Structure formats: C-alpha cells, structure tokens
Image (cartoon, rainbow, N blue to C red; front, side, top):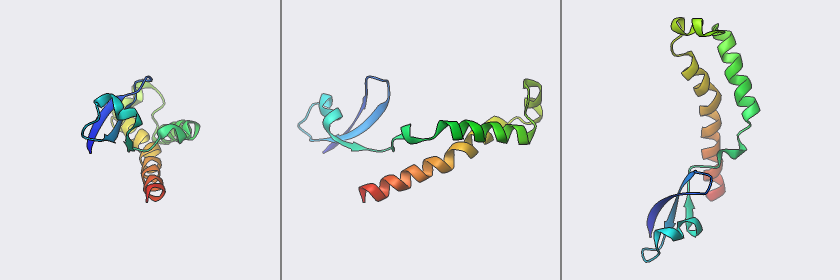
Length: 96
C-alpha cells in the first residue's frame, strides 16, 4: 500500500492509501486517511469566541492592533485548537 495525496473538486486535499499497483487516480476510492472532517465545526460558535476574545483583549479597531500584536492569532487559536483536537480524538475512537 502507498499513500497518495489528491485534491477533490472543491479544492480540498486528502490523503488515501491505495494498492501499490493502483494509479494515483484511484486515491478518491482508496482507504481514507485523516485529518478529520472539519465541516462539523460550529462556525457560529467559533466566530462568537473570536469576537469575544478580541473584545475582552480590547482589540476593537485597527488602531488597537499595535498594542496587541498577537491578539488575532491568539483569538483564532483559542477558538479552534481545542475543537480540532476533539475532532482528532473522536476520529481515533471511531477508527479504533
């Protein structure tokens, strides 16, 4: 078996295992590999959490960014990282 990375019609990259003798074009019907499906993330919750973090940090306008240069990165991380880790853990349980 070998791993093939391919791009679907929506532009998302995927990895799959195919037999050594299969062409790369067979990857879409191969054995799928992670990462988990992020479509189940509740983006309304993510947007709310980013907004709340930035408000709490006082990043309300572009003028606030120099005083809080890492605030946007921190907001995105705080809103997404934990949720993504949960998806990986769920995937492991489901695949287990």
